[in-house]
Length: 388
Ligand code: SAH
Image (cartoon, rainbow, N blue to C red; front, side, top):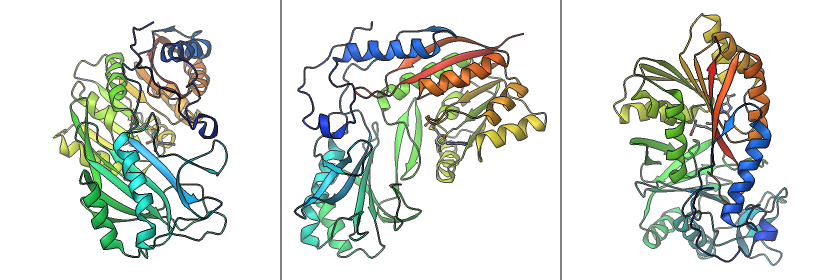
């Protein structure tokens, strides 16, 4: 195994009620062994699995922190996480995997609410104002975005509240109000209003600068994201001429990092905000060989295949549910020489690899990267090549 130095730390006091860090009873080296074994079990029949890359300091890595607000039995405002598979809020002020600044900002907001006559939302009665607070921090830039998810656009004492929050946390660079007035378990609503700053943060990853808005997906572990992306780009074996497709591209990160070694890159992503960020990000980095489309990746792929268009390399980074038939079948039909599959779920990865292997691809190797220490989530990059 990798030599990992682990700082001794007490176990989290919320371990039982939160359920977020499922592996925290294991030492970190043991967690890595557990993840390695799981990847081998799921996909070892397809290819060699390289040794998982762990973190040297596997704590406080989460650059995006989300807290639910509510009230306890005595009516006191609490903030924290939902108990696993329920909607009961476990009060948490400090978390061993979350960004420390983000945790402090959330506690400050909770303490400030009563003096500004602001209430926390109650899911049972649909009454109350503040539903969630989301904090995102740029690891390399230190920019901090606070998103106040509220039930109504009528924000009592908004100006003095924002003023005091900024006085207490001058590190905050932008504050966004997100209005979620629906009866839903989704955190973010559609409507947004920038209350302070530019409404987004920027971060730097693999030498590229990225704009990240409240709703766009951005990898949550910046240190390991560099390892993940560098592995993905290495697996693609680009020479500078290739046509590349970055499917499920989010804000365009993988495609843009790859674009420096490729001829041209097309990115496809379903979330319109993320696509806007991707287009902006290409300009921000003076990248002229990337294009982005807002569409379902399967539909886009089908259209590309139907029009006889092809790509030399396809990066695919679907959500936990994995890809779908439509995407995989068109991919096989299109027949790129290389496919680099970035997966956050070994089970759906295994299911999708089965289809790709039957369709004429050979899985060459897989590299697990520990993006989520102490949790049972596993990230893995697989290199596939088309068989002649
Ligand atoms: N490659 C990016 C994002 C990966 S997360 C990165 O590394 O940051 C998966 C992304 O797939 C999310 O941005 C999500 O919005 C997008 N997505 C989910 N379903 C999709 C679909 N059917 N078609 C295209 N994109 C989809």
